[in-house]
Length: 295
Figure 1: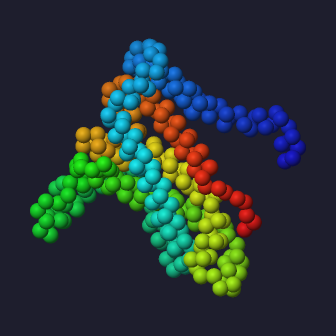
Figure 2 (figure 1 turned 45 degrees about the vertical axis):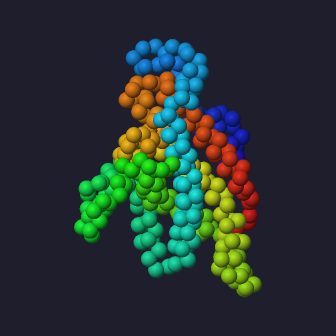
Figure 3 (figure 1 turned 90 degrees about the vertical axis):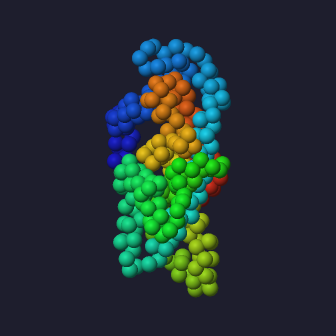
């Protein structure tokens, strides 16, 4: 193995397929999108270079402002809620034996289901005349809430509903990551802490949290990137409505590119989204300090 690693030709041969795939699938499309973002491009004609016009148009686009605000809300809500709830589930299931696998599978199951199908399911559940509202009307409530159609508030009710549905669907992913890290902690550390008189909360604070911090950074980065490019649930539940109140950057990009055929403008939104993902990832890695411990 060491001889193979010293052979530069072998290293190049092993790396070449991944490098070609990365270049064709990721690098070239990113470069093309950056170029198209400086062009007036409709898809059917050749792109015409217009400089920063697409980017300056973003500042006067009210829908882009709403989409940016909703994406930032979704980013903060997803990172905080999945960190808290996912860590709670992980600690809870790590400390129980009876039914652990059953509850773990139940919580993780929504992650592997189709987001498009779940979006349609929750759309019917929160429909004005079906699902929850039908149940509320049967209980005597004459005017139940318009869960996915309310437009009042800085963050509208439909955005809160979609955020909680996304938490329900993806919290299992964070839970599994935290459980994997917690299960790797040496049990003797916990035994020593209990012998020294530490409570379970003190043990969690001074042993578990520091040792799972690298996984916290990883999970936060995945949650942040996933929330910024979030699309399928929103599109299937509200399609960005009503009146664009639930638009996020990904849905606005889709609308501009595939509905109005403004590929240059959509590419500019995509570049903004890419830059946001990079900034948020760097910020998380900077804020969440990680140290290596012997476990």
